[in-house]
Amino acid sequence: MSTDVTELFALPVGLYPAYKVDGQVFYSSDKLKQSFLIAISKSSRVRHVSANIEKLVNQNTIIPCFKSKNILSFIKHKFSRNPEKNVVAFYLPDDKKVLVIIDNDISLFGTSANDELALTTLHECMHLVAGRNYVNFLKVFRPYLDKFYKNFFENYFKSNLDKKDISNITIFISKLERYGFRNLNQQLKQYYDLLDKIMSNKTKLSRQDFKIRLTKLIVAIKLLVANVSVLLRNYHSFTMVFTSLNNSYKKSFGKSNTQTVPIQESIALSEVAAIFSEIRPTDPVIKRLFKLVT
Image 1 (cartoon, rainbow, N blue to C red):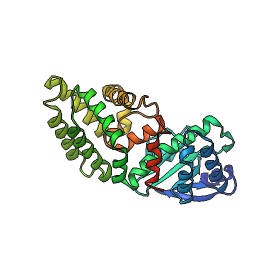
Image 2: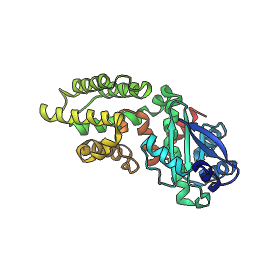
Image 3: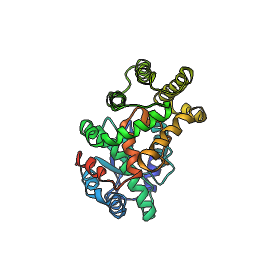
Image 4: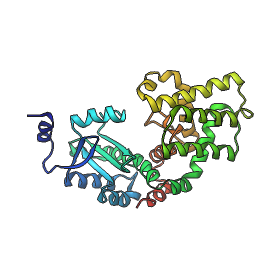
C-alpha cells in the first residue's frame, strides 16, 4: 500500500481533495470546515472579523486542511516553515488563497488552541488582503507602515528621516512585493543606492560604519530571497538587523514580534500588517482591511 493511501486511512472519513500545490494534494472535509469556523467564532481575538473569515472560507479563499506526514515534509521543503505546530498556514500569492493546515485531532480545540488558530489565520489574511487589493491596502494601513519603517530605519542607521524619505523607501519596497525579484542583484543594488542616497547626509554613523550596516542589511535580504536556510544558519551575523526590526515593532505597536525572525519586512510591507494583526488583533484597522476583500 502506498504512503499516500496509508495516510488517507489514518485521516478522518469524509475527506475530499481541497487544493493542489505543486502536485501536493491538500485534503479537507465539511466537518473540518465547521470545526474551523466554530474555533474562529470562539476566539475573542478575531470575533469581530469572524463573519469575514467565514465568507472567505465559503468562497474557498481560506481553505482549512488536514495535516499528514507528506504535508509536513512538503511545507518544510517549499515554504521553509516549521510544520510541527498544531496549526500552520501560508498564503499562496499566485492563487491568492490561504491554506490553514490543522492537526488531525480537532478535539484539541480549546481556548489557547482557538487563539493559535485564529492568529495564525489572521496573519496570512493580511498577506491575502495586500495580494488582492494592494493599492487600498496601502491607503488603509499607511499610517502604521510609516511609523514602523521610520522607527526601523532611524534606529538602524542612527538618522532622522522626514516623511518624504519614508515614502520613497516604502514605495520601493512595495514594488518588490508586488512585482517580485526579476533581477535580484540589480534590484538589490537599486535598494542599496536608494538607502545610501537618503541616509548619507542624515546618519550620525561614520561613513565606514554606515556602509557596514547597509551592506549587512542588503546581504540579509539577498539570503532571504535566495537561500533562507543559509540566512537562519548565520543568524548571529545579522543580529543587528533582526534586533532593529524587532525593536521597531515594540516602539511602533507596543509589543515585540515573537512569532517570526524579523526580516521579511525589508521586502514586504504586508508582513508588517501580518505581525501587527497578531500583536493588536482587535484594532479597528483589521476590520477595515478585511472589508477590502469581503
